[in-house]
Every structure is written in C-alpha cells, then in structure tokens.
Length: 128
Image (cartoon, rainbow, N blue to C red; front, side):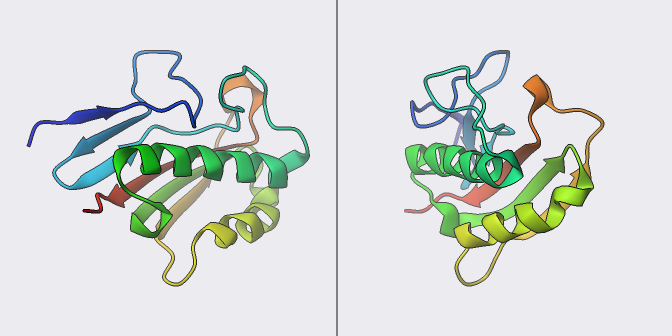
C-alpha cells in the first residue's frame, strides 16, 4: 500500500514542507499539531488548558479525515514549553482517551513554533 496524504480543513493547514497526516501500512501518522485554530493564524487563548484542547481537536480532525479516530491512537509524543504545565495538560489530555490510553512520551522543549505552549503528534491505527 503506497502512502497517502491526509488533508482536512478541521486542522491547521500545513505551512511548510509537511503533510497534516500520512496513512501508511495500516497506520495514520499526524504531523505535530500546535494550538492554531483551523482556518486562521490565531493561537487558542486561555493558557495550557485551552491550547491542549485545541491541539487535541486538531489531531482528532486529522484522524477523522484519515478514517481513524482518537480510540485508534496507539502512541503520542507531547512537547511542552514548560514541564510545570504537565498536570494541567494531563487533565485535559485524559478527557480525549476513554478506556485504554495510548503510550505517550512527554518532554519539555526549548521553544515551540509561534510561541505555542504545547505541540502533540500521534500515531493511530487505520480503522476499517
């Protein structure tokens, strides 16, 4: 199965040499999502909770456009601008995974694009 590019208006448009997502070998790989509101160049306002919610909704949009969903996520990588935001981030993040949550890596990044507080990428099973 050749790779397939995923594109949706339910997540921020790619602004460089990358795709919002790629389907390959039964998996969906999302690009790292920052808390941009789709169709705008505006960051979600309201701190880490609001930015986490926007990031997770962006990931959900890419996954749904690919034929997957949040329940298909098997791994996420989370980049926080400040690791002290972990508790607040985790409280919102957990609302998106009912039942068995995916494996996850969380690190503090030196800086994130456009001053974002968070960026998340996901790998999910392609649901049939």
